[in-house]
Image 1 (spheres, one colour):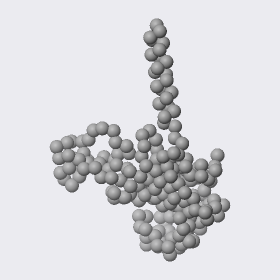
Image 2 (cartoon, one colour; image 1 turned 45 degrees about the vertical axis):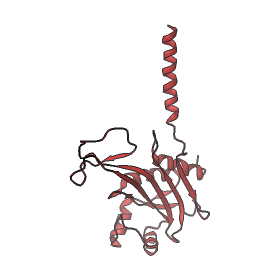
Image 3 (tube, one colour; image 1 turned 180 degrees about the horizontal axis):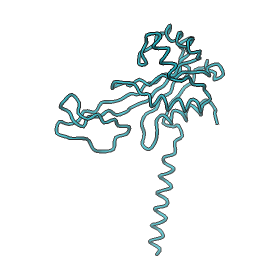
Image 4 (spheres, one colour; image 1 turned 90 degrees about the vertical axis):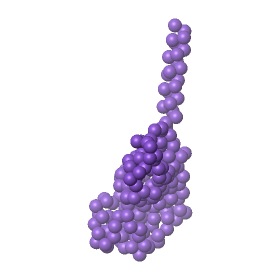
Length: 202
């Protein structure tokens, strides 16, 4: 009976400890604010799709997630369709880097104070010609199947998320933040928590 009670206490302790271990606090992210940043001045922003580095394409899912987070932080966010419409009008693409002149023009047309841009950095992990897949626990993996016709089980590992809020008027980076994968949590949420702390938002 005593052994059963001790075993139950041990299981309860493990469950409680595991729950505490997964609580996110922002400690896995880094962020810095420009001395010229003021949320009252740079309140109306647009969020571009995040660029993939290390593999092709853009990531609109992450930019959608940061739309929610920056609204929670008190920013006013412009609908993506408005951004797309302006870029088409200017004969620009969503994944195309903007010059300072283009940035300022986009800002004027959208009546925004700043533009949020970000990157998702990936490391390519080649598969084996003998393997049909890969095993083991990989953080933030993106399986891509057969690669270049001979390598199977190849995949990309997300190594870092970065973002920067840029003034459309001056091109100055107002906010810079980044985070790396860790076990049991979301990188994007860690960045949000770090910014929330820096901006002194309850």
